[in-house]
Length: 81
Image (tube, rainbow, N blue to C red; front, side):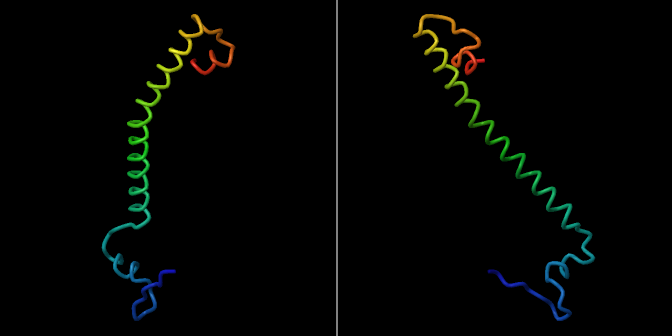
């Protein structure tokens, strides 16, 4: 477990350093979190779209192998739509 750094007054070092700096640590943490979420979502889309296209191609090839259109309410039809 990491120790906490305290100054001579017993305050957390981070609080002491940010005091008077005009930086709102909560707002900064929220901004950083939003950037992480945005980057994560973008990476998921970049990797998911090609995989989903590949999966759709496989489903369509299975449909063709089985002799044509699949009934919409069948499990395969529901997977395709």
